[in-house]
Image (cartoon, rainbow, N blue to C red; front, side):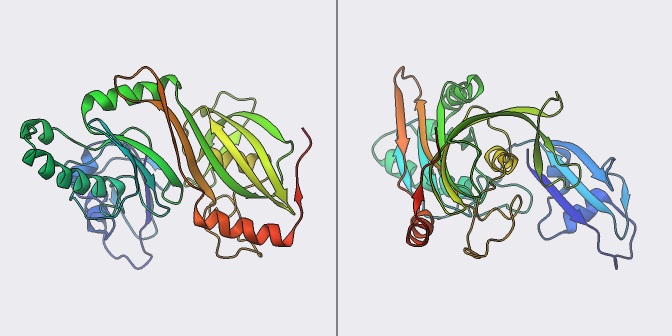
Length: 323
C-alpha cells in the first residue's frame, strides 16, 4: 500500500484540521481523495481521524488502499513496449518512473503514459472499424508494481476480464518473476531460500525489516543464486515467491549484502558513490488471457548494470561461491 509522510514545520502558527493541512501541501492530496481509500492515519504515532487538528512539529503518516484515481491525465511519455495485444501491454519500466498516481506523484507515472499510448492506439483502431464502446472500456489494470527506482518488466491489463485473469496468477503464485541485482557484500552461500516474515520497521515507517521465528507481519519468500562475486560485490539473480513491499531489498539486507545504490537499506558506496538502485526485473513467465501455455518475457541487461560490471571486472578477479 502507498504511504505518505509529512512533518508540520516548526514555524507553522495555525491549528488546522488534518485533511485541510494535507490538501494544502504541494505534493498532498485533495480532501475527497483522502476520504476514499485511506486505511490508517497516524499523528505522532497515534491513530486519529481526518478531523484531528495538527500543530507545529506534528508527524503525519497516512496509508491508503492502492486504488487508481479516476481523473488521471494521459501524458505523452516514451515507453519501451515489450509486447502488446488486445488484452495486455507489457512494458520495460525505466528506473525513476512511478507505477501509478499517488500522493506526491500525481503525474509522470506509467499509468499516465499508458493512457496516452492506448488513447493514440484507439484512434487508429476506430479508423479500422473497432467498436468505440469497447475501446472506451479500456482502463489501466495495474496488477503488480515495481518500486520507483526498480526498473524492468510490468504487465498491465487493458480490460477487467484480463485484469482478473492476471490477478489470479499473482494470487495463486502460478507465474514466475526473476530479478537481477548487484549487492555490496557476499551472500552466505552460492544459493539459498529465504523465508521470513516482513514487518514495518518500528524505528522508521518508511522501511521494512525481515524477522524470523514469529507470526508477526507478512510471510515472504525469496530464492537466490549468486552468479559471481567481484571483490566485495556480488551479482545475484532472484526469484520471488511472494510480492511484499521492498521484499528483495529487505531480504538482501537480512542476508548481510544490501543492494548497491539502495538509499533506504544500504549506505553510500565509496567505489560507486553515484550508483542508483541496482535492481531490475528481467524475466516474467505468465499465461496471457485465455491461453493455457506460458509466455516468457525478458529484457536486456540495463546500461547501468553493464557499466558497473565493467568497472568491477577491471578491478577484481571473478570468483564463484562454493555450492
